[in-house]
Image (cartoon, rainbow, N blue to C red; front, side, top):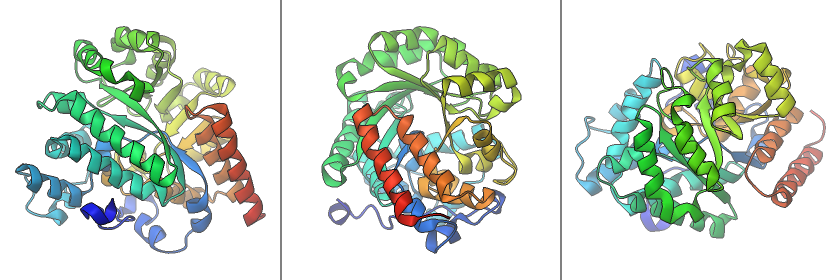
Length: 371
């Protein structure tokens, strides 16, 4: 695929490093850092990844030319310079602007293949990816074109690299639930390709309680549920996501520590949290990586996983997120192996598939030996 299209110029190209991360992600990706080789060989799943958030400036410009879309940026460096955000909403404004270049099935195929090519080089053995159909159907792009392009790329990755995948249809919470119900209606012919539904976009002021009907319908159809909660929204949103939407995982969830009772519940039930460390810093949830609560989440016994969220915008893919927490908190190989094992256990893979990956993690630990 890479040779055929040329869209993937550099499989480890990252956005510019940001001093606020508390570490130089680009520097760590270009040379040996803390457990650099171990991290990249570690079998891991990515469970919190927005496909639209993997749109690198190079591909954005390529698709803009292909589809005759005029961007407000004259060149690639000016696009990267725009990736400075004060909060979630300031990011979303640019994120949806980037979506404007995605117009046809081939665009979604190319977008998805570019992401999969990168992460299969980083030890990722399984992905469960979000897509936002409402961001595209609202622009006149048929739902079928969106999901078919993505599905086709996931199938290619499976046959080419043995990379397994699950697809998660995410509803945009800043839009009315009626709009989500329309998206659910559009999805009906493609349910064999979709494993779960999610809830994303602007969190403040849009609680999970506003989407109980659509999630009831998706669960009745046999789909699993996940939801963004406790990133910028309060811990109460996490409780709502669990009790009202029936989620199997909480996306982000970092504000759970503000509610000790909720923490006890999450620990007791081992509810996975799909934490995105670089994203949390880039969007100002925490002032720096060292100033984040990531290590405390681990110490509390919560089932923490490491993910990249929107890597083209936030400075690193999943391995760079592992690099960042390993460096900031002096994590051992055992710690990193546990995080990878958590990602496998928290996935929607069958138990026998999980067992294979968990055995591979244990084998890698044994190969590297004690820290």
